[in-house]
Structure formats: structure tokens, C-alpha cells
Length: 215
Length: 303
Image (cartoon, rainbow over all chains, first blue to last red; front, side):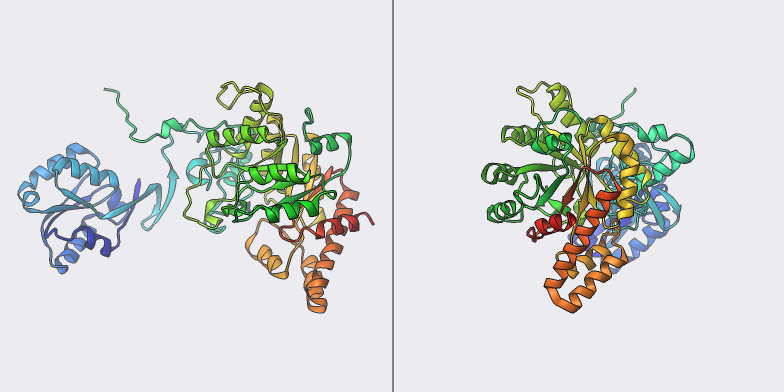
């Protein structure tokens, strides 16, 4: 799940200055789970924008905005309202905003900040779990990712910044990922994996503008 | 231990009990205080660590002070290198320069996270971790290459230190991590500050099978403020109530002077006790800003 939060109204106000008519796009997948771009939130944004004196020409909740095909289809279905707008406000992740910008060729305004790839404990509680490093080490780290969950992304932790299993990053509130990894591997009788030296990662796997193309 | 290149490593190998000190290059362009500190420590410690942006505060680069104290004062440096601020390229480059300047000891560290530093907005690097830094150092020295295997002309000769935390809770992953570093080729351990002789004893016992020299860390208190701060904000370090109380009482009764002489008593005694009950090779004393206390503590520990 891509976890998002709303941008402050003030920032949205600044970005939409001079855009009198707006079309809104929400997302039926991650942003709905995050309560940032579901039907309810899109309607609330519409009311807020109208209060600010703007005209909302229409809105759509695309099943998954990041899928270009679905977004293209939904924008087509709403062509009149999209064409009538000066810009589009997207209440979803950064990938969604770029997909809308690319498909619509309109001025596109991000309504959210994209936080991380995370897990949903329940609505309102989201936790980072993956940094998309391109070289998954979860087998040897007891299913706990040190890249996403260790403050330093260390491969051979823990470091001196842990105390009683807590991490110095964030003021000793979060668990030390490496103590969690240790506990897990100890309990499953796999400490050999803990003891092993993991050499530095190949960060070229994380270089920007990554692609997966198999057809 | 492998071949000794430094005076520190040679002394340890000979079986001498060694003392090391610590120098913090501050946020300044002046080397005056660094040199003054080195002069105070000279003759009392065999080498002094020079810190690398400690607690993620941007200070003068550690390499230049390391070089200057060796050249001007004749005090050997333990050049501290953290992996927080530089990627493997920058670290390799600095290590080549360090060797050119005659540095013989390197302490490989992770480094406190940038979020606890004096500009928390800073992007941390951590391209390597402290374990991988040991691997890099070993490759430079033993194979004459960088981490990737690219050849170095005139490879450096370093003795490699790593940190250990006797206060770690839980302690097991800390010990396993140290074991991993020693297997990769670290020559000695300098520990974080320890105040409880039992914790020092436990640590030394836990790493004894690695047959690696241990220098136990001592950090006397410069003021009650520093002590209260340590107790409150550094949960990784355990200061027994008894020590806290003795120092508080001393301060109340006799002010600053009594507080400092109580430090000499406490830490001199602590060293004596740890020396008696363990087989450590030395003591690493961290006294930023009141180095004059180091000779007194050492002297007291011998009584």
C-alpha cells in the first residue's frame, strides 16, 4: 500500500491560485484506505474548494489511478468536465498525480504528500515496511526489513543507537529493527543468518527512473 | 592481533596496559584548543581518539587534527571514521589521505544519527555500515585494494579498532555483531562509556572467546548538568544510583571542585576494580573539555 496524507489547505490554496475551475481525481485503492482520496474525501475537498470560491467541474474516483489504462478511460468518460477545468487536483499518491498529468496534459495539482510503502494495521494506523531497494533480504532478516525499519538502513546491526530494543531515531519510541531481527532469528533457530556478514548493497539497483520491462 | 603498525597496537601486543584519551575538534577553524588538549594528554595516554562529527555535530574534519597532534605534539592519533557522512568513495579517499599523513590507527564507527545532531535536517549517508568499513580497511591493508578490488598504489598500513557497548540491552545481538567485525579483521575494541563494573565484567567475558584486546571506555562527568543530561537523554548508558548520589552530594557540600575530585575518586576506583576483575588491555578515557583530570584519574587508579 502507498501511504499518503493530505497536504495542508493553505498549500493547496497557493497551488490552485489562478485556477478558477478544477476537476478532482480520487483513487479507489490506496488513497481510499488512507482516507485521503476516497469518495468521502473527494466530496469534502469539493465542498472546501467551493467555499474558497472555486468551481468544481466534476470528479471521478478511478479504481487505481496508477494504472494508465483505467485513468485514461475515466478521464475520457468525463471529457466535458475535464476540458472545462483549468486544472486537476489529484487526491492520491505521487504516481497517481503523474499519471493524471501525463494522461490529461492539464495543470495537475498534488493534493497529498506520499509518505511510504507501508502496511495498514487499521484505518488511521500505517507503518512503513519497504523501501523498494531492488534486492530483498527478508529471508535472512526474519521477515523484518532493515532497509525500511532500521534508522540507518544498516545491513549488519544493531548499532550503538539502540537501548532496550528501542531506536535513537525518533526519540527511543520505535523498535530497533535489528533487535527484532535478532529475536526472530533466535526464536526460529536461525542465528547463523544473523551472524553472517552482509556486504554493502548494490545501490545502483536503487538509482532513479527505474523500469521493469519484460514485454 | 595481526601485524602492529601503530605504537598503540605495539604496546598492546607487548602486553602493556594502555590508556587512550579523546580529543574533539570543535566548530572552529582554530587548532589551538586541539593542540592544548593534546599537550595535556601527552605522556599520560599512548594515543588519543580524534572524533568524527560526534553526536552528528559538524566540527572540524577529524583528519587534520589527527595529523597535527602527531606532528606537533608527538601524540599518536586514533582517527575516528563514521559511515554517516561519507559514502565509500569519500571514505576510501580520506583513508588514503590519512595514510599519507602518517595515521596508523582507525576506529570504524556507524556514527550517531543525523536526527540527534545539530542540524537534524541533514541527509545521512550510511552507504557502508561500520562492519563494511572494517572490510574496506582490511582490504586496503591486506590486499591493497578498495572495496571493489581496484588496486591501490602504496597501500596503507592501519590497525583497526571497533566500538562495543557493554551497556547494550539486549546484549546478545551486540556481541554477535562485534564477533562479525572481529572475524572480518578488527584489531581492538574500544567500548562506550561504562559506569557499572559488573557490565564491564560481563562484556569482557562475552567477548573473551574472540581473543581481541579490549579497552574499556570511561567518561567522567564535567558537571552535574552533564551527568543529569546523560542519565536523562542517553538511555543506552547506565549510571548506577550510587555514583550519581556521591557526585551530587560532593557538589552540594563542596561545589565544583569537590565534584571534580569526587570524579577522580570514583573513576580511579572504577578502573582499579575493572582491572582487578577482568583481563582488559586498557582504558579509554573520554573527557571533553577537562582533560587535566585524566592524569589524576590514572594516578588514582594505581593507588
